[in-house]
Image 1 (spheres, one colour):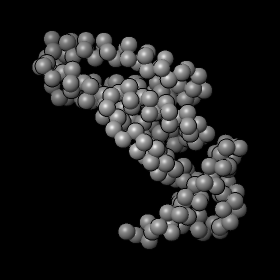
Image 2 (cartoon, one colour):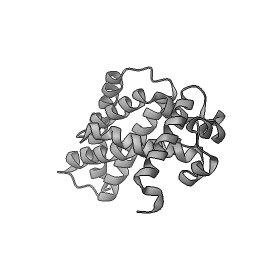
Image 3 (tube, rainbow, N blue to C red):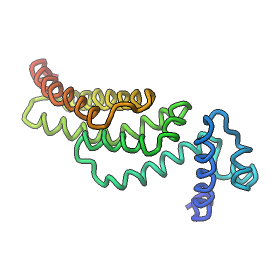
Length: 194
């Protein structure tokens, strides 16, 4: 454990993150300065820079720390529908941080966070459907990536557009597309010897 990973260091990171989150509720991330964070935290700039490289690294830390603790409530995501519902619920519960992340560099971090669970559950679904088919592992991975990235980008678009559609509608629409097309893609791959 290095000196930056002590319980005291974690508490300071949490304090800095809490200050940034409060500021993000009232203004865009691009309008927040390190000085505002340090003033609200009652710390000096050196303390901030000891724990974080810049404001964006605080956002990344928040996504990693808080999103993963949020994920614990979902213990095991058994289906792609569970993974989609997790993302929808997380985004609704953390709108200001998710929207700030999308408005900055952190969009890629958010995509990666969402992609992990979607990819795992889609891979499981495809493996189950493909169990009695003669399809290469390479094609199965391609298909998994195709659907995973499609779902993640669909969900990112939903967030960008203000999260207007209700969760059940989104899950139903995704299920309608996924349930038929994966099986058909596997049939086609088997015919084409993919």
